[in-house]
Length: 525
Image 1 (cartoon, rainbow, N blue to C red):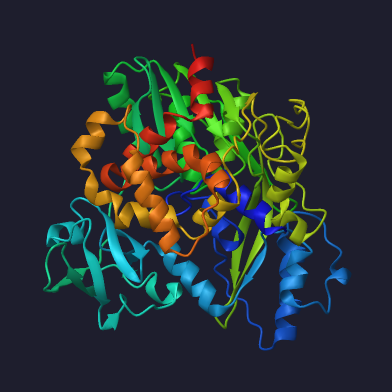
Image 2 (image 1 turned 90 degrees about the horizontal axis):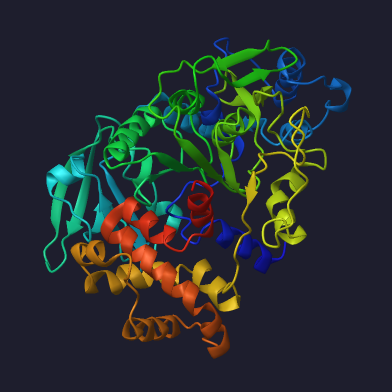
């Protein structure tokens, strides 16, 4: 893959990759599927025995017919890659990490942070979480986590990340410097489950059109959605834009729970089926908060799994309009089979099908590498940027053409301003650094809240940004800077709003110039 192409595709999905979910690959897809873990532990003393056991499990459980003779004598990873891209072998450490994350016993202290010049800068503190109650605030700098210095040491990123998380009920000691103070303060916090709404933003786009953004389906998403819809109805909402772009999935029960809020009783949401798995139907219970109002669902190439299930149901049942670009195309269900040494096999056992019987899963016949690079192919083929959309699927077709959900209304990706300079700034996160290091101190949350619709970055701020870029030893070519300037200014604005106004402010600012949101508003008139 050419580096410039890869960067363009990633930037196209979103500049601020640290702020959204994005597509999940490998074992993380198990979270999406409401999977079960086999209780019977498999025993294999040697690697050869483990391969034999895996082939035995495949023969008994895999979603399709498999010629086991073609799998013998292959390394485990190669063996599984011959099946599909989402069946995966987890070594003991990975299997343990996954089991803990799924158990719900992981906790934190309720902060978000960003690595700015080898310093952990606190960018958000969840209200009423352990950190908030202890007095830690946005703008604080973390010097030490327990006894480990994490600031000023130029530590590799992997040594800085994830150290604050841990098992619920265990302590963590943070050494903090507050802005304007020279003396460090030590906080001993007890890790806990921190309640964070899975709704990133919910507000009124117009006098009667509401907007709800969901970047992942968590355990409480349906409940959070109900609260948001009730609040928006009180503000006059009669039509809804449900934004599932860049939603990589989540819990199946959360997706079906949300579907219950927008679909009428007894409507089929999705069903699963495999060679060894009988068909299982998921049906709407009715009585939802938004069964009747006009609906537009936004998707893109990074909307995957559970978000595709919801979009597919809305489309098949003619409940609303699907707007944007073709979704990712992940419709395989995995189940986990553990081994005695702590390792595990995540094996595809079934497929998802929309109410009309179409499989969401895109093809993986070209092999594992081609599947991984499929979004690049969409970019190179012009599907993302030129208005060239795949032919619309027949509602009676058993498989989606190309995989994923085709939108009813296509909106191409606008790549104006994406050039070598912008790609460099994005890759090095220079704009984020500038916002957190310089610009955040020049504006207040109150000012941004009051002036959001008309606020623009000043020329003085922009000149300071150019100096900041040059101080980072990046060559600023005038023509490229001029071409990328509108995009850069908008990115800085939305990132500044993210810092001071949170996710809601970020999406409010972003949507002011978002072509897909504008199309949705027009389509609902």
